Length: 269
Image 1 (cartoon, rainbow, N blue to C red):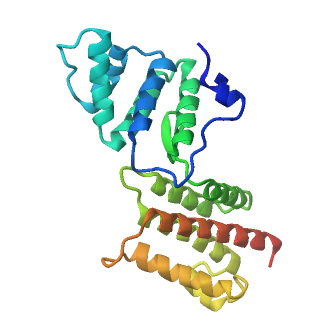
Image 2: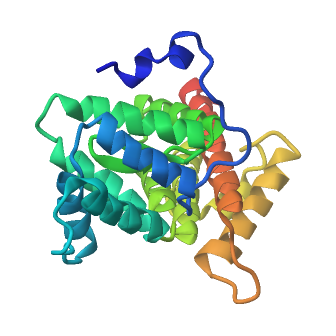
Image 3: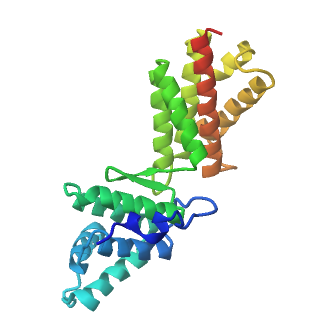
């Protein structure tokens, strides 16, 4: 059987490219259908083997009246997968990863899932059997660059805070938007304290006292960013709820500012 990567479209760079925003909180029917096909063709699972995992994961009893692989058990599996909640579909992705955890098919399964997610515009990535937020590529690169810079510069606290910000964005069924922003701003505050030598001041106070922390008028923008994050994430608001795009924006800006200050601190300025 040919690997999925050997197909004509992949060999010639003609595979479908998703356009538009990534999908995080949905599992459209084409994705579900393709997932079933992946289990059958890439993993080579029989309908009864699929049903065992699906029923165990969903805590439902297999239909004792269905005993033939096709069409009975296959139809039962399709019904369960096509009708389940979107987050249950992603639970299944991880559950089936466990079934191939100690087999050579593990990497092939992860590669096939990640290729499917990429083509369908799903914002998740299967890594070592666990789904992690894939995010928009520019944000991922900003966070990764920032983490590398902070780690290389010895900012262990800030590095951990950024990692936790990303983890909060990855939480499902509901991401912890307030938590992600709080951790991102805590990372920036930790770097600012080290740069300024003011270990007890808040980021807002440091910005007020040290106008050279960012080149003007970016120092004013940073002050407003701190105020917005404090009002929306730290203190909460009944009048207005954060959305995922705003959280991405604030986490990304915080990470960029962390990188800037870490380099500035290393340069001794």
